[in-house]
Image (cartoon, rainbow, N blue to C red; front, top):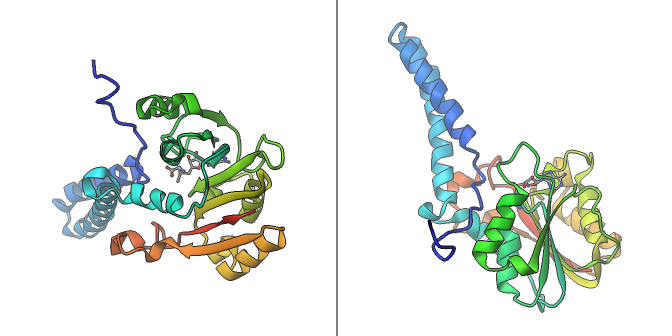
Length: 254
Ligand SMILES: C[S@@+](CC[C@H](N)C(=O)[O-])C[C@H]1O[C@@H](n2cnc3c(N)ncnc32)[C@H](O)[C@@H]1O
């Protein structure tokens, strides 16, 4: 049996294994057909390229390939000017990647990780709790199932709210800006926030400067926006629009 000191938290990978396997299998099927008729080599090559792209992305996101995923999550922590005293909320916590790093960075804070844990992702409350034990922060973290569209907390419950790549996923909210507003509702006046999402997708959020103005119009005191996709450590191939090429961080103080 492994001791908990030798175990590592499992935060998952933003590239689902099915994105590598499905085109890989189709590539093999078409390769087989290419022995009967050479033109099947064309779709075989295309599916091979798609599978290869996702394998490359999976590796670059993982610790073996430069830990790009963890470094992108870390950009949220870098933006926080928080004293670490009080309650924090991570909205759409997945397997707790950001929740637990928050708990480790702020040893006096109590952190809640909230997620809907639907079928689209290989994340669960159970893995969050196990990761928290491995990371040694289980006594200061709780995980709760709910939708980000209607947070089960009173106004101003948290000193800090964070979220990573979740708001655009919230299917029970037609306008994702309302998910952002709901996240800000539960932050105390004077509390901090840092949210990373597809804020450069205008069809979802409008233009970034208009989004900043909108958030200010909700009574939020300080709002800043930075483009994550300009970070030089992110490989060019991962900056394609459907990967992390259109993400940014909205942060500030309520
Ligand atoms: C791209 S993953 C990001 C997970 C995590 N923040 C991370 O950085 O690893 C998107 C997350 O949004 C969660 N999600 C989707 N719809 C949600 C909803 N309505 N309410 C809360 N979380 C939701 C998913 O379960 C998933 O964990």
